[in-house]
Image (cartoon, rainbow, N blue to C red; front, side, top):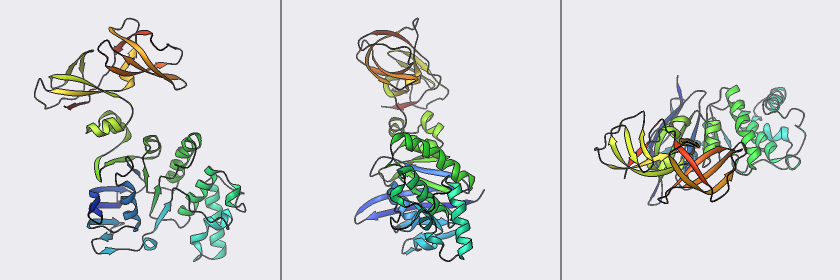
Length: 347
């Protein structure tokens, strides 16, 4: 499978500060990738460099085997065959939906242009709305128009910069699935930039977690959640707590709630102090369980309730119960350990 985009050890600087440091990855044709990380981690700067809005001080950006950026050379954005969807949509309020979508198609004949506009309206499920104006649309519809406009010129690559951050949670979740389906139906190669892991999980085939300008792990959502390669990623992805323990054997850790054995071996010295990651689904309610705890906090999630439970030692853990198990703050519960994998980091 051929790579549409390849970044080779790129660096982006602003004055004396390094914003993106030695960043390398590639995205194959038809794949949807994501750069995920907290604010200020360098993900947006990396996206802008891919688009041609930021120069690189080291390395290369290659699009379809053509070097588009290297030190001293930045190919113009309009020559990169890239579609871009911005956080604020960047739509023209004085143009109709159809004219917004067709804005980059002026080189086409009128029938060709109209045919592409009609196709894009169908693709984003807005057929019949071409004559409306932007102020007549909901936020979700405006985002669909922005996506249709980016797709209309048939770009090699589509870039999405925090595209759903202005939408409410329900609309965001619906659009996540819709956008993935639309891009997959067009066999489009894309990169999403976001700080929202749920968004990244819903849309992307591969996710790169960034912090302090560096790529820490490039992997699937499943592996980032279950096999994080650093303490930062373990803390940033999903919910969980770190329980102090001692490495008893390469694949078991002794903790205050018992010995946890896993499906991987660590090369830390036996007896090393470690931090063991426990997810809410690793601690389950069990009336015969040997872990006694007190409910200290609860968050209703619909089908489930996320409980914070306090052990006798004062250590707090997270646990998900089915929501018909509705305990009050201060109630005592019995739990058991149900961790069938082990994620540990040396202290």
